[in-house]
Amino acid sequence: MEEAWYSIRMRAAEGGAHETGGRHISGAERLARREQLETYAAELIQRAFSHSRGESDFVNISIEKLPSSILKIPPLALSTESVQDEAEGREKAGQILKQIGVSDPAIGKGLALLQAAANYRGAILIHGETGERVDDRGIRGVRVSRMDWDHDSYSKWAEEHHHFCSSRIAEAIALASKVSHSPFTLAELCWSDDPDYITGYVASPQIGYKRITHLKKVGNSSGGRIFFVNKDIDLDSYIRYLELEPVWIGKK
Ligand code: WAQ
Ligand code: MG
Image 1 (cartoon, helix red, strand yellow):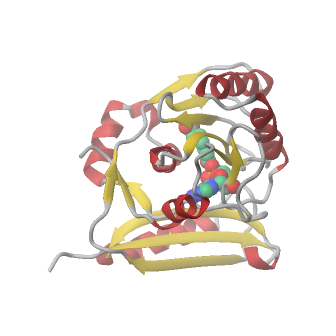
Image 2 (image 1 turned 45 degrees about the vertical axis):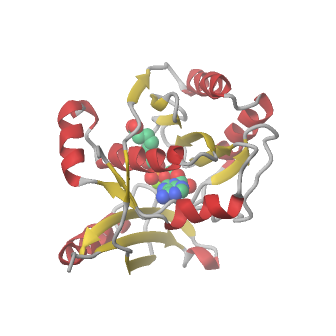
């Protein structure tokens, strides 16, 4: 019998659980073998309690066994745009999104939403043409889950990209690669909600994972993710893919 894979996820908040109004502190998702679960759970607990956004007093860890066949998709290609400050960075992000085909109103809306977002644990989905929000998840957003790097592929990738080997970057590329793989995604815009991390990115199938060195000021706890979707979107199947479809990132 083939050995099973499990999805293990963590979400942590301060001031109570997310669902009772707690402030989102940290979250993470991994795929693991049965014998790795204890180690991963310990790492995730450690992460929940040592975060720059605050002191968690609610932590939820969930584990689910997955079906045996798991889709494998390649990582987006990485590149970096160096900018002087967040004004230049946001201008640059806007230019890149426009080039991908996102409309001016949708770009404006996306930037404004992220600037004001301080407590989302998931992404905000907006229409790439009208700029209207298309999901109904309120301040929770849509959490992309059940993805991880294939271990051998990650080791190779890390050798080729040794300046970029942090777990933060690895996780962001995994997420962006899964999101971009959907035909309903036009582009993604992200910067962290962690006050000490100011580099963000724009991603799409055509431009890959494009890092932008400043998208906010140090000390600012606003941030999040915007998925710009195209006009053919089937919302239910898109959200089902993002939340539920297990995906490995790596070379086939
Ligand atoms: N699904 C949907 N949205 C998510 C997920 C997820 N699995 N994980 C995080 N988010 C949203 C949520 O609103 C978070 O508050 C926000 O994104 C930021 O998450 O140098 O560190 O983990 O190349 O703080 C990108 C640049 C760093 C890395 C992004 O995001 C680089 C980052 P964080
Ligand atoms: Mg964060």
